[in-house]
Amino acid sequence: MLRSNDAARFWNWFEQRNEDFRFFREMDQDEIVSLFDELTEQLHLYCTSLYFEMRVDEQNQGELVITANCDQDFFDDAEYLVGKAPQIERWTFTALIQADSDGGTIEYGELELIAEDMWFTAVEDPDLPEKLNIVVHISDYESLKQNENLDDAVFILLQSLLGEKSFAENISVYIVRDLPESMEEDEFPTLDTLPAYIAYLKSERNTAMGNLS
Image (cartoon, rainbow, N blue to C red; front, top):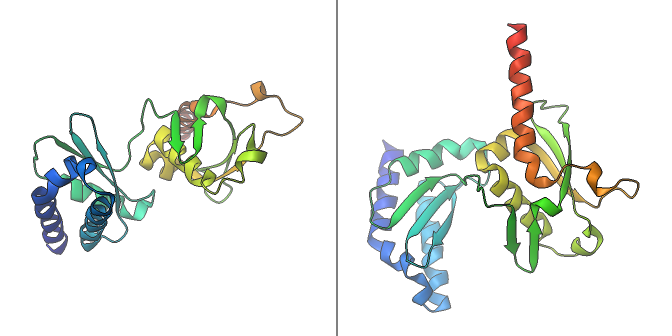
């Protein structure tokens, strides 16, 4: 009952303020910061481990995404909250960041990362064999590693390619490195093929399990 009340309180507040978010670009910067700080505060009254992404298009159609930052312990809280969302004109509400078919390119600060121009190697995590340890390779890593936003940008790119739930379920650890000097680019799969690679591994595991049963 408590969670239900907290969810209702959040959505009552958001419904009252939804027009402010649809037209936030018309506000002064200080007003925008205050508005989104208030959204964080209201969301954290429901669950302190949830965050949000908001997208408003040129027609002022809005989408509010409730994210757990890939923490599986709070996926249920995000899904429950969105499941209680009211119908609000010109808004859609999404639980967890979804895989984006056009998510192979991101801009983050001064960085632009393009998945088809990046590569990866993957091995099973010895402690969590259902998950992968990933090395993301970037050809100009030596210069890019000076950028403090690089790890965050790669995280966002991986999450965009896989979706938040698949990322949490299938990736244990990821690091960013240069291509090995002894290897050519065409000897590595490009990063945009990672979702298909994970789907293939799952299919192989399911086949193996079926053969054992």
